Image 1 (tube, rainbow, N blue to C red):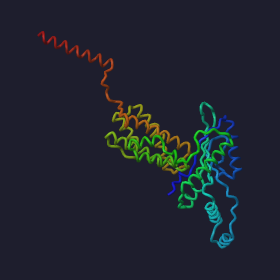
Image 2: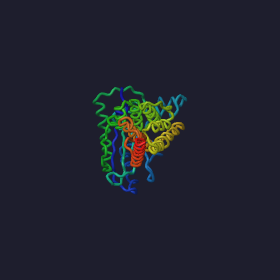
Image 3: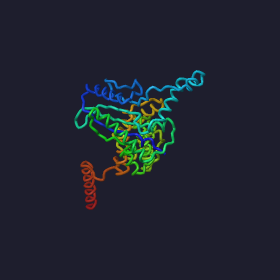
Image 4: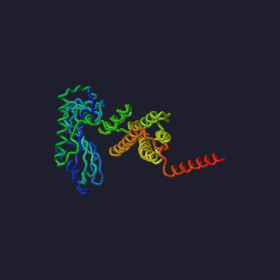
Length: 347
């Protein structure tokens, strides 16, 4: 069985530029793709000069003329125009070579790289085979040669696009499956948090291919906090009460009040509650916003794994080394006991 993320190629590039030059960069990319017969998937998603958007371009199949049998069926009321166009589209998709780049996704963000202002460009290419599987439900069996051809064609096309603007490569184009697993998921696996690692990887895969991965991140937060509370031999609160599980870690001595407050603020209020609201309302979420939420979550998970699982560090356990005041009070108390003993002996 073909795993679709094994068909998608992604790379990351950097183009040095000032803010007022970014509009020209967007126009150049769009013009180049148009020459290669790629058109915006949705004209409303075109790049605007005043903000950074994610844009998708799809291979233009050209004019799809309906054969007479479709026209007759439409005239007799058996087919609508929309149904005819759908049939023509799938006929064309099914007859196109699977390795050809079909969908190009470009994400731009203004950042500094090595203290140089510019635009970081994340570019992803999905081949025709991806849509033959996901839209046409084709049960495809690809051998190593076919996989290699898909990787080569889409990798070279990304390099060609980025070469047209002389962008510097930050991450070589590669199949998503080659690097989707994060360092945090590897650490989760090493500490036997297999379920959470799987949820995290599944979510990141969805993010990379432009799918909604809110539910997976909610699951990571809920399950991780519940499991880590269990690991310290406490009874966890319900899965849907991560804020209470954070409190339990503080009560067990693994978090001080300031750190607990920071985690409540960043993970629970800034990420979890917002994601729950988005999930409940079935709202769309921006790619970069979701990546930010994943980044915050991974940072907190990494911190808790090290502090609680690896080092078992407690913060509110009374130190065995007394401070200066405690030492002075102890010495004074000992002297009083000693004086009382001497007086008693004299009597």
